[in-house]
Image (cartoon, rainbow, N blue to C red; front, side, top):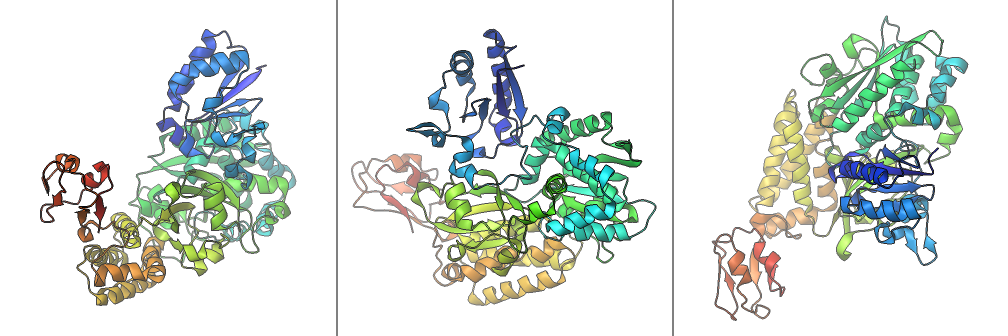
Length: 595
């Protein structure tokens, strides 16, 4: 029996910051101080506050240490674990108050969150099945197999209002019902873990922190539709998630929770992994199934839909990781419990990966209907450096920009679609006044062009033509007629592309045109980038009144474009300037500005 448990984040974010080395040093120091029998070190999944990693929490007092370095470990062990004295300088600053140290759940980042999909992330060791079982794991599967019929399970999901968290928002219970209705000698349950949106890491974090929740949910799905085989399609770039899934599947098989005659019910179900090679288009359901079959990952026309003819031509359901992570809790707590959260048409919670110009980058899970302002200003801690909020991109390359005028919009599926955006899988990238919206649209379109499988002409050719027009605009070479061509192309590609990749590719362009047309027009009419981002439209100037002639800018110019004598104002030769910004960065007097 240990008197203290030290939880160290082992998610990708903290691992990249050195948490593995911290764990090794921690174990060494604990042994050196004779505490091996008293203190347990546990590797967990992501806690959510990725900007503060590496993260360490010590129980039973729930002390939260952030940005821990290897050299801090001896002090933590000697002071906190040996003598019971908290190392205040390493605490997460928001937990330190004049009245003492407040609980982590009372901080702005956590107090408005409600964790269902993330309930075990950062709490249990994902590589130990007993810890998952200790939090109620596999009870839902036991309940389903011993107390419920397949129709009962499906009705429970229908009543809960759970919609697919992968982006489309299709009712999960209805998808399962359609698959159950189709008779076949074999059916399949697939999990889409091919999360590819720039800035998105929700599914990866669930797999790294709570893989058994997904396995349990897939087994429940297999029972509900009459399937005996499941596949998790996970991208190979997620090595920690892949390793923990392998461990979890092995443990579940060993305990009889996967395989033959689960819970002595006569129900057989097993799961295998398939690794994706990083193709964004394989996040589309038919392309994913084609890839599992061993073929080039390209989408195919629908109908027939996967519930009728999916993997290997058999009825198949496909849900993403977050969708599955909700299901065991819905079974245990009831449909009414889940439906009591969220909005009328969007029930439950949603996980978002906060990124971009925001203090608290990381992972959050909020009830549907929480406003964008609450997410950014309260949970996210606002925008750094006193900058103003300009827009938020949701849904990655498939989504759109939400401008400041919709800052108070409640986040749910229908509200986001009504303003030209979409939920997507849950990436939320925050932008401030220094971001150019034309450049943002160009960035996402470059990604889409690169990731198009090329099977259909509207996507393969149309997105390239769109990118060409956007590039002309950012270089100041476009005319106003190009805006009309761009918009026309957007609608043509949306209507005629084969799959969701091409159908949603124009969204970032359409939403920025809708809300930030003035920026497009400034690039075209005035040959000016209002945000000062597009290099071709920039020029760096020196304010003669502020310049002290220190020569620092000239000495750091890589192209010798700056001339002047000591203690006299300098000048930038615009023909030589390569617009790298090194001069502006080095100037100590604020004499250099962008125009």
